[in-house]
Length: 269
Length: 307
Image (tube, rainbow over all chains, first blue to last red; front, side, top):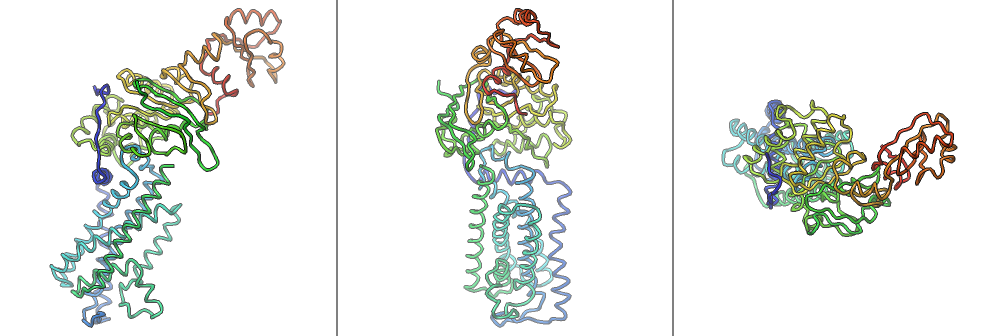
C-alpha cells in the first residue's frame, strides 16, 4: 500500500526538466499511425523538388544568384524546399495540434495543476515540434547531397540553420494559436502559409518580383529562411545571412513570449 | 499548529463579477474540509485559487506557508488536484496517464511505474491498465483522475465535486476510497453540493452562498446550531401548501414552506405529528426524520439547491 502518511517533498526545480516532461508526454503518445503523418510530411518537399526543381528546372535552365554565381534550377529550388519543409513541420505541430490540445483535449489544464508553468508547456511543445522538423530536414539534406545539389560540409552547415528556421516558425505558430478562436481560422493560417510558400523567393529569385513589392517579400520569415539556407547551400554566405539569423532569433523569442503570456491569460484565469 | 491553507479576506473577481467575496478559511493538517454551496457560490473559484492556477484579486492566501503567486510550482508539487471535469489524457492508456503525469512532477521513471501500479490497485483499475481512457465509465474515469491526483504523494488533495454525475454505486466506491485516504492522514479539501457527501466525508465545512461564507463548523455543529433535532415533512394534496403552513404556526420552532411540502423544525417529531392531527389537519403523507445538512442549507440560503 502506498504510504501517504509521510508525504515526501518532491523537489522539482528547473525549467528545462519541466519542459522536457511535456516533450516526453508527446513521445509517449507515439503510436504506429503517427509514422504515416511523418512520412507524408517528409514526402511533400521531396515531391516538389522532383516535380518543379528537376522537372520544371529542365525547361528553366540555369539561374544567376545575386552574387553573380550561376547554379542549376534544382540547386536553386532545393534549399528553398528545405526551408519550407522546416516551416511546415513546425507549423503543423504548433498550430493544429497545439490548438486542439489547449482548447478541446483540455490537456494543459491537467498539466498546469503540476509544477509545470505555461511557458514550460510552450517550450516543451516547441521542442517536440522540432523533433519532427529535424527528422524531415536531415532526410531531405541526405537527398540533396545524393542528387549532387550540395556538398556534405554545406549540408552539415545547413542542418543547424534548418533547426533555427523550425524554432522560429514554431514560436510564431504557437503565438498565433493562442490568438485564434476556432477551427475556421486555420483556413486563414493555411492560406497565409501557402502564400509564403509561393512568394518567398522559393521558385524565382527576388529580382523577378516587381521592384515596388520586393521589400514585402524580403520581410517575410520564409524569405529570410530561404535566403539563409540557400546561401549556405550554394556557398554564397555573407553578412546578409547574419541578418537572417538575427531575424529568426527575434521571431522565436517574440513568439514564445506571446505564447507564454497568452496561455497564462487563457488557462490561469 | 499552523494551518495548511490560510485565507483572510480572499477575493476573486472576473471583470465586474465577484465570484469570491472576502472569505476567511483555515484548513488544518489531516482533516477533510468541505466547501458546500449551490452552483455559482464561488466554490470552484476558491479551489482554483488554492490550486495556484488562478491568482487572487485581493486578500491573503497562504498554502503550506507559501505564497501561491510567487511559489506556484513549489506549492503545486505538494498538491493533488481532481478537477470538476475530468481532463485525462485521451491519447494515453490508463497506466500511461499516471506515469506521464508523474514525470510532470519530476518523479523518476522507475518510481513512477511502481507508483502507477500501486495506485491502479488502490482505485481498482489494475485490470484496465492498458486500456485507453475513452471507453471507461464515468466512475472509472473519476477514480483514475483521483489516482492521478495522488501520483506525487500530495500533502493536500483538492477535489472539486468528486462525485457529481456518478451513479450511486460509483459514488459509494469513490467515498470509500476517499475515506481511506483520510484515514492515511491525507488532508482533503473538497467542494460539493451534495449534503450527504458533506456529512459522510467532511470533518469541518463552510457553507458558501454568493461568494461569501455563511456558516462554518462540523456537520453536527451546523445541524445543532441552525436546525432542530428532528424534521417533520408534511405533504398536502393541494395547489399551494401555504394555507396549511399558516395553520401550523407555533407547532415547532420554525415552519418552512417548499413548493411540494411543508417542513416543521421540531425537537420531537412524534409529538409534533400528534399536534398536527389535533389541529384537524390531514396531510397526505407524514415523514419524521432526523435533521440533516440540507435543512441547515435551506435555513441559511433560504432556497432549495440549484443543481
